[in-house]
Amino acid sequence: PSHFSSSQRQYVQDACFSAGIEVLQLLNSTSAAALALCSRRLAATTGKPVRRSPFRTMLVCNLGATIEVATITVEIASRLKVKAVAADKNNGGDHFTRLLVDHFVDELKADHDKDISTDPAALNLLRIACVRAKKTISNYSQAPIELKELGFYSTITRAKFEKICAPSFRATLDLVQTAVRPSPEEIEVDEIVLVGGSSRVPMLQKMLLDAFPNQEHTN
Image (cartoon, rainbow, N blue to C red; front, side, top):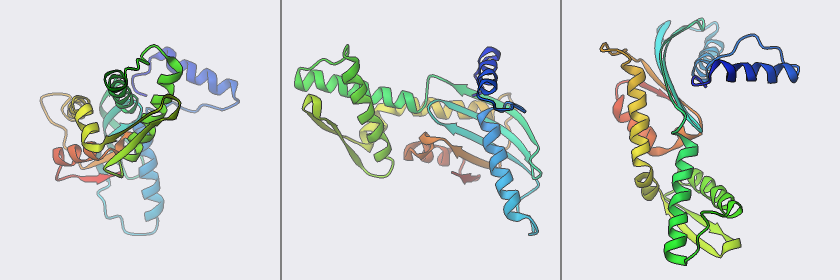
Protein backbone atom coordinates (compact mmCIF):
# COMPACT_ATOMS: atom_id res chain seq x y z
CA PRO A 1 0.00 0.00 0.00
CA SER A 2 1.21 3.50 -0.80
CA HIS A 3 0.46 4.64 2.75
CA PHE A 4 3.03 2.21 4.21
CA SER A 5 5.82 4.00 6.03
CA SER A 6 9.49 3.23 5.41
CA SER A 7 9.56 1.05 8.55
CA GLN A 8 6.50 -0.90 7.40
CA ARG A 9 8.11 -1.47 4.01
CA GLN A 10 11.23 -2.68 5.79
CA TYR A 11 9.11 -5.15 7.75
CA VAL A 12 7.80 -6.51 4.44
CA GLN A 13 11.34 -6.95 3.14
CA ASP A 14 12.45 -8.58 6.40
CA ALA A 15 9.52 -11.01 6.24
CA CYS A 16 10.42 -11.92 2.66
CA PHE A 17 14.04 -12.48 3.68
CA SER A 18 12.93 -14.75 6.54
CA ALA A 19 10.78 -16.73 4.08
CA GLY A 20 13.67 -17.10 1.64
CA ILE A 21 12.13 -14.77 -0.96
CA GLU A 22 14.49 -12.53 -2.90
CA VAL A 23 13.15 -8.98 -3.09
CA LEU A 24 14.02 -7.12 -6.26
CA GLN A 25 11.79 -4.11 -5.69
CA LEU A 26 8.72 -3.12 -3.70
CA LEU A 27 5.83 -1.75 -5.74
CA ASN A 28 2.73 0.09 -4.63
CA SER A 29 -0.36 -2.03 -5.25
CA THR A 30 -1.68 0.36 -7.91
CA SER A 31 1.61 0.23 -9.86
CA ALA A 32 1.62 -3.57 -9.62
CA ALA A 33 -1.93 -3.69 -11.00
CA ALA A 34 -1.03 -1.41 -13.92
CA LEU A 35 2.07 -3.47 -14.71
CA ALA A 36 0.14 -6.74 -14.61
CA LEU A 37 -2.57 -5.40 -16.91
CA CYS A 38 -0.09 -3.96 -19.41
CA SER A 39 2.02 -7.12 -19.42
CA ARG A 40 -1.06 -9.22 -20.11
CA ARG A 41 -2.11 -6.95 -22.94
CA LEU A 42 1.38 -6.91 -24.39
CA ALA A 43 1.49 -10.71 -24.37
CA ALA A 44 -1.92 -10.87 -26.05
CA THR A 45 -0.90 -8.46 -28.83
CA THR A 46 2.53 -9.90 -29.59
CA GLY A 47 2.76 -10.16 -33.36
CA LYS A 48 -0.56 -8.35 -33.77
CA PRO A 49 -1.36 -4.70 -34.56
CA VAL A 50 -1.50 -2.60 -31.40
CA ARG A 51 -4.86 -0.85 -31.31
CA ARG A 52 -4.26 1.19 -28.18
CA SER A 53 -2.05 4.26 -28.04
CA PRO A 54 1.46 3.34 -26.83
CA PHE A 55 1.05 5.94 -24.10
CA ARG A 56 -2.03 5.84 -21.86
CA THR A 57 -2.89 7.45 -18.58
CA MET A 58 -4.68 5.05 -16.28
CA LEU A 59 -6.58 5.88 -13.13
CA VAL A 60 -5.98 2.72 -11.09
CA CYS A 61 -8.47 2.31 -8.25
CA ASN A 62 -7.50 -0.40 -5.77
CA LEU A 63 -10.73 -0.80 -3.85
CA GLY A 64 -9.85 -3.51 -1.38
CA ALA A 65 -9.89 -3.63 2.40
CA THR A 66 -8.63 -0.04 2.16
CA ILE A 67 -8.72 2.46 -0.71
CA GLU A 68 -5.74 3.42 -2.87
CA VAL A 69 -5.89 5.26 -6.19
CA ALA A 70 -3.18 6.50 -8.56
CA THR A 71 -2.92 8.16 -11.95
CA ILE A 72 -0.23 6.37 -13.92
CA THR A 73 1.08 7.02 -17.42
CA VAL A 74 1.92 3.72 -19.07
CA GLU A 75 4.07 3.02 -22.10
CA ILE A 76 3.15 -0.11 -24.03
CA ALA A 77 6.49 -1.66 -23.02
CA SER A 78 5.33 -1.48 -19.38
CA ARG A 79 7.23 1.62 -18.33
CA LEU A 80 5.31 3.45 -15.65
CA LYS A 81 5.29 7.04 -14.49
CA VAL A 82 3.18 7.69 -11.41
CA LYS A 83 1.68 11.17 -11.57
CA ALA A 84 -0.39 11.19 -8.40
CA VAL A 85 -1.33 8.87 -5.54
CA ALA A 86 -4.06 9.12 -2.91
CA ALA A 87 -4.97 6.63 -0.20
CA ASP A 88 -7.34 6.23 2.73
CA LYS A 89 -6.58 3.39 5.12
CA ASN A 90 -9.74 4.17 7.10
CA ASN A 91 -12.10 3.59 4.17
CA GLY A 92 -12.77 0.56 2.00
CA GLY A 93 -14.12 -2.97 2.33
CA ASP A 94 -13.21 -3.41 6.00
CA HIS A 95 -14.93 -0.13 6.83
CA PHE A 96 -18.05 -1.11 4.86
CA THR A 97 -18.17 -4.33 6.90
CA ARG A 98 -17.82 -2.41 10.18
CA LEU A 99 -20.76 -0.20 9.19
CA LEU A 100 -22.90 -3.28 8.58
CA VAL A 101 -21.82 -4.79 11.90
CA ASP A 102 -22.74 -1.58 13.74
CA HIS A 103 -26.13 -1.55 11.99
CA PHE A 104 -27.00 -5.07 13.12
CA VAL A 105 -25.63 -4.54 16.64
CA ASP A 106 -28.14 -1.69 16.91
CA GLU A 107 -30.91 -3.86 15.42
CA LEU A 108 -30.20 -6.66 17.88
CA LYS A 109 -30.35 -4.25 20.78
CA ALA A 110 -33.47 -2.41 19.63
CA ASP A 111 -35.58 -5.30 18.35
CA HIS A 112 -34.30 -8.28 20.36
CA ASP A 113 -33.00 -6.67 23.56
CA LYS A 114 -29.57 -8.26 23.05
CA ASP A 115 -26.41 -6.19 23.46
CA ILE A 116 -23.41 -7.92 21.87
CA SER A 117 -21.25 -4.78 21.64
CA THR A 118 -18.88 -6.14 24.31
CA ASP A 119 -19.00 -9.80 23.24
CA PRO A 120 -15.99 -10.50 20.96
CA ALA A 121 -17.19 -13.98 19.96
CA ALA A 122 -20.65 -12.77 18.96
CA LEU A 123 -19.19 -9.77 17.13
CA ASN A 124 -16.88 -12.05 15.17
CA LEU A 125 -19.81 -14.25 14.13
CA LEU A 126 -21.73 -11.15 13.06
CA ARG A 127 -18.75 -9.84 11.14
CA ILE A 128 -18.42 -13.12 9.22
CA ALA A 129 -22.13 -12.97 8.35
CA CYS A 130 -21.82 -9.35 7.22
CA VAL A 131 -18.83 -10.10 4.97
CA ARG A 132 -20.81 -12.94 3.37
CA ALA A 133 -23.86 -10.72 2.91
CA LYS A 134 -21.79 -7.87 1.48
CA LYS A 135 -20.47 -10.18 -1.23
CA THR A 136 -23.94 -11.56 -1.96
CA ILE A 137 -25.59 -8.18 -2.52
CA SER A 138 -23.02 -7.35 -5.17
CA ASN A 139 -24.95 -9.85 -7.31
CA TYR A 140 -28.41 -9.96 -5.73
CA SER A 141 -30.87 -7.42 -4.34
CA GLN A 142 -30.72 -8.76 -0.77
CA ALA A 143 -28.90 -11.22 1.46
CA PRO A 144 -29.68 -13.03 4.71
CA ILE A 145 -27.98 -12.38 8.03
CA GLU A 146 -28.14 -15.48 10.18
CA LEU A 147 -26.69 -15.94 13.66
CA LYS A 148 -28.04 -19.32 14.75
CA GLU A 149 -26.05 -19.16 17.98
CA LEU A 150 -28.02 -16.06 18.99
CA GLY A 151 -31.31 -17.01 17.35
CA PHE A 152 -31.02 -13.90 15.17
CA TYR A 153 -32.26 -13.84 11.58
CA SER A 154 -32.48 -10.73 9.44
CA THR A 155 -31.82 -9.47 5.92
CA ILE A 156 -29.90 -6.64 4.30
CA THR A 157 -30.97 -5.21 0.95
CA ARG A 158 -28.58 -3.67 -1.51
CA ALA A 159 -30.48 -0.38 -1.21
CA LYS A 160 -30.09 -0.38 2.59
CA PHE A 161 -26.40 -1.23 2.31
CA GLU A 162 -25.91 1.66 -0.11
CA LYS A 163 -27.69 4.03 2.28
CA ILE A 164 -25.57 2.90 5.23
CA CYS A 165 -22.34 3.29 3.25
CA ALA A 166 -23.31 6.41 1.25
CA PRO A 167 -20.92 8.79 3.08
CA SER A 168 -18.04 6.32 2.64
CA PHE A 169 -18.86 5.88 -1.05
CA ARG A 170 -18.80 9.67 -1.51
CA ALA A 171 -15.47 9.84 0.33
CA THR A 172 -14.12 7.20 -2.06
CA LEU A 173 -15.13 9.28 -5.07
CA ASP A 174 -13.58 12.39 -3.48
CA LEU A 175 -10.32 10.47 -3.05
CA VAL A 176 -10.42 9.42 -6.70
CA GLN A 177 -10.88 13.04 -7.74
CA THR A 178 -7.85 13.96 -5.63
CA ALA A 179 -5.70 11.62 -7.72
CA VAL A 180 -7.04 13.16 -10.93
CA ARG A 181 -6.62 16.73 -9.71
CA PRO A 182 -3.44 16.77 -7.61
CA SER A 183 -2.94 20.38 -8.71
CA PRO A 184 -5.12 23.06 -10.33
CA GLU A 185 -4.40 21.40 -13.67
CA GLU A 186 -6.47 18.24 -14.13
CA ILE A 187 -4.77 15.09 -15.38
CA GLU A 188 -6.40 13.70 -18.52
CA VAL A 189 -7.29 10.06 -17.98
CA ASP A 190 -7.75 7.51 -20.78
CA GLU A 191 -8.83 4.50 -18.77
CA ILE A 192 -10.27 3.62 -15.36
CA VAL A 193 -8.90 0.36 -13.94
CA LEU A 194 -10.73 -1.20 -10.98
CA VAL A 195 -9.09 -3.85 -8.81
CA GLY A 196 -9.82 -5.27 -5.37
CA GLY A 197 -12.85 -6.94 -3.84
CA SER A 198 -14.78 -3.71 -3.24
CA SER A 199 -14.58 -2.87 -6.95
CA ARG A 200 -17.46 -5.36 -7.31
CA VAL A 201 -19.81 -3.09 -5.34
CA PRO A 202 -22.37 -1.95 -7.97
CA MET A 203 -22.83 1.54 -6.54
CA LEU A 204 -19.09 2.24 -6.58
CA GLN A 205 -18.94 1.04 -10.19
CA LYS A 206 -21.86 3.32 -11.09
CA MET A 207 -20.39 6.35 -9.32
CA LEU A 208 -17.08 5.96 -11.16
CA LEU A 209 -18.84 5.40 -14.48
CA ASP A 210 -20.92 8.55 -13.94
CA ALA A 211 -17.82 10.53 -12.95
CA PHE A 212 -15.81 9.32 -15.95
CA PRO A 213 -18.36 8.56 -18.71
CA ASN A 214 -15.97 9.06 -21.62
CA GLN A 215 -13.15 6.84 -20.41
CA GLU A 216 -12.64 3.13 -20.98
CA HIS A 217 -13.45 1.09 -17.87
CA THR A 218 -11.59 -2.12 -17.02
CA ASN A 219 -12.54 -4.29 -14.05
